Length: 194
Image 1 (spheres, rainbow, N blue to C red):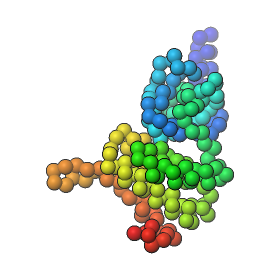
Image 2: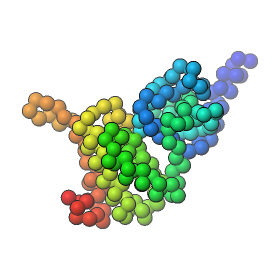
Image 3: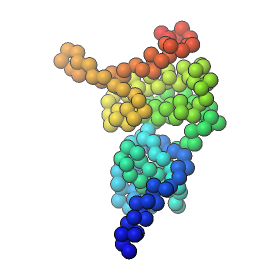
Image 4: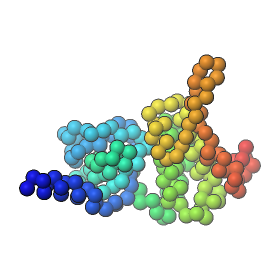
C-alpha cells in the first residue's frame, strides 16, 4: 500500500498541467515543499529565475523549477505570473523599458526581455520593438558583467553568455555581445547600430 502512495506521489506532479510561468522578482525567494512560511525552504531562488506554474494553494503558487528539477511552492507576491501570449507582449515591453534603467534589476530585466521575445509575434520582433528589446538586453547584460554575481548563472539560462578576459594581470568578465550582433543584422537606426 505504501508503494502505491509513493507511486501516486511521483506520477501526480508529472501529470500536472502548466498554468503559465512566473519570474522571481526578488532575491532569496523561498521554494518550499508545502505552502506556508513554516515549511523549511528547499532552495532560495534568485531574481530573474523562471518557474512553471502548476496550481495555486492559499497565497502560494505550486511551481516546477526546471533548473533544480524539483517542484515546490513560492509566495505569489514574490513572482510575476506570465502567460507568454502575443496579447501580453506590449505589457512585457513596457516593463522591459522600465527595468532597463533600474540598476540592480538586470537579471529581472533580462528575464522579462526573454519573456517578451517568447511572447511577441515575429513581425514585432523583426521591427523596431525587437531592436529595442535586444538593445535593452545587451545594455543590461553589460551592466551585469561589471558587477558579477550569482545572477550570471541565472541569465545564462536565457542564452546570455559572458567571456573572461585577462588584461594587466586581472581577469574581467565581459558580455559576449550577441544581442548587439543581432541588431546589426536588423533594420535598426544609425544610433542603435553605433
